[in-house]
Length: 94
Ligand SMILES: [Zn+2]
Ligand SMILES: [Zn+2]
Image (cartoon, rainbow, N blue to C red):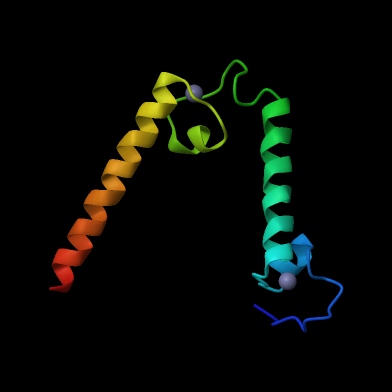
């Protein structure tokens, strides 16, 4: 990671500032958020989420906006596993 960017740098508020420079100021975070949103919408528009041959039942797909039962279930399972893993990590530190 490069940076930090000087406060008057024109690259603030761009995905370049966020991604390449690792800047986490509000305008840079906002640019990144918008960019991610555009990406999600683009993927949605291609029909990858709902088209034929799509594998459902993954937490990733849920993240991409699919709310079918399989994807919801996968997401629930993942968050349960994450929680369990965290508990175990805590225990092994004691
Ligand atoms: Zn910035
Ligand atoms: Zn799904």
